[in-house]
Amino acid sequence: MTDDRKEAIQIQGLQKIYRLYDKPSDRMKEALGFGRKKQYKEHYALRGLDLTVYQGETIGIIGTNGAGKSTLLKIITGVLSPSGGKIQVNGRISALLELGAGFNMEYNGIENVYLNGTMMGFSEQEIDAKKAAILEFADIGEYAYQPVKTYSSGMFVRLAFAVAINIEPEILIVDEALSVGDVFFQAKCYHKFDEFRQMGKTILFVSHDLSSISKYCDRVILLQNGEKIGEGAPRKMIDVYKQVLVGQYLPERMPKKNQAYQALDNETTETAEAQAGIVPAAFGNREGTGVNPDALEYGSKEAVIESYYICDDRGNRVNAVMKGQEFGIHMKIRFYSQLAAPIFAFTVKNSKGTEITGTNSMVEKAFLEGVPAGAVKDVAFTQVMNLQGGEYLLSLGVTGFDKDEFKVYHRLYDVMNIAVISDKDTVGFFDCNSAVTVTDGEEVS
Image (cartoon, rainbow, N blue to C red; front, side, top):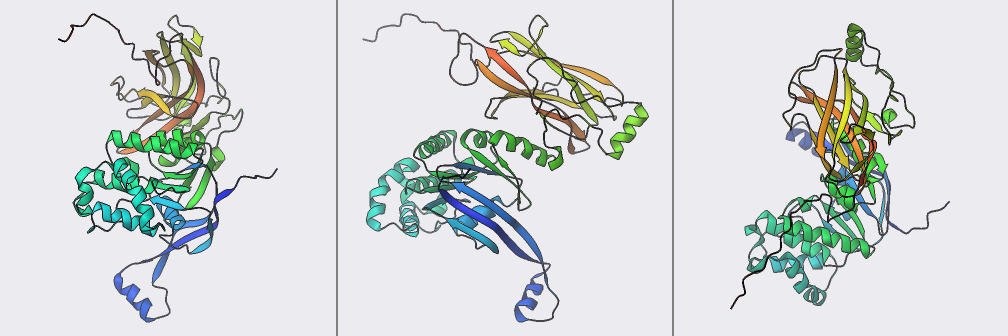
């Protein structure tokens, strides 16, 4: 089956290699041709990357610092030249990269509007026609006539974003810039995002704000050490990214249907299990309805969530809860190693992967004790259901700190669904349960 969508960006085997020198004199020696020995080390910022972006898509790019995200965007926009591979861009690009890119700090705001417009290929007359809309969106008042070097970071990004989205690009590229500015400006920017998507524009969006990635992106690319290690639906890629963040990502541990829990070939864990005389429970040992057989799990398994369930206010195990009703989230954890202060947690997400709410035992100051190997703990989170009616996904975890290092012992993502039954749905995710009073007011003469 062929894909007849039009390609906005086509990348094949893209590489970017930097030469790293131990000291400045090594760079000079090489430039002058002294010696045959190579004076540098090669650092691959991008390593054989393949990527196709189709017109009208909103693509999120995520990864740890140094993964290659910004390098990729700079190559797409022409700021950097690739060391190898092919790249083809079909359409006018507008890019909002790091703060200050494309601006002359000595010029005032108006002059920079014309400078950026000219660089994008617009005539002075065309910029004249767009200037009012740009200044209205930026909303920086008389500062538009002051040198950009006097701007705060918030004013700077306001003007930069206003220019980027008002030159009618076919492809908009944004790299973390929206983390600057007040909440009102950010809301205005995201509203513009929605307008762009409805107009069929192509958007490449780099951000560490995973909620925004989940909400706005059609597809997510996950980079690590200059390579693409994942590509797919936002919720799936965000879950894998969380594994990367805690050093638990292994491709062979990606979720498989009816996967069985197997003892890790981790010497520390095996030794602790043997000393405690413990045999790990089967992965399928789950309780209650609504269990996800494709749940994503990972961790060191020094502690294992053996079973879990949801119960209503009468103690019945359910996966449907009435709005306004008290309910409990329960899990049983077996410990294979002695742990200083394990942290028990749950998270609730919507079907798009946006984290709606959640908490843990450390935040709640409910359990700050050490646990010996061989112990079993029953953990219960009890609260009132205030979510709007609908379907949600539950994730569970046991984590902790080994000295100053954060460790994941066991995480289960999207293990169960929670159906919220409601006869009154308000705006947003939560019901404020407002008490409404209406009284006669005094007439104003």
